[in-house]
Image (cartoon, rainbow, N blue to C red):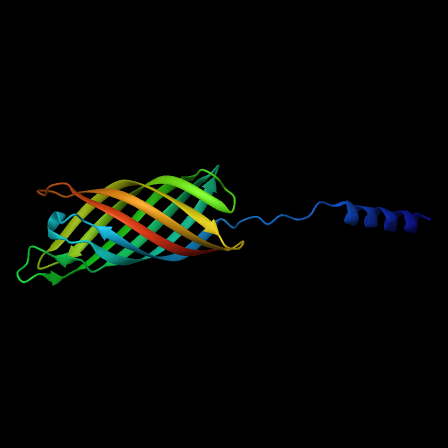
Length: 172
């Protein structure tokens, strides 16, 4: 009789249990493609870029994010104009306004821009960003992002850039 009661209790627990809900992972790696408009500041024309991005969910809707961009802008100060190499790694924090399959966010990044021209130009930047990630499955997202940066350097005018990108990330 005791065996039947245990079996009946187990069966009732299995049939009465709520369905399992997927929980999103808290780390991501991804690639992004975008456009960076320098507004011809520092002699740089706008350029497409490819980026490597990552994120780590901290708690209460906050994530630490990193986006490293590789670009080839045109140096408008050189004669004739020519392509140069630019790298722009950044580290920031963002706040997720929703934590569901659609995740809009706002945040800020601290970035470093290095441009390899005839001389090397170094800039430190900070700027706000906003975007939204759309989850295609529990571990894959597609997102859009916009960012405005202010770049500072010694003995240089303040430089600005406006960036827009589309990214694809996998969560684990």
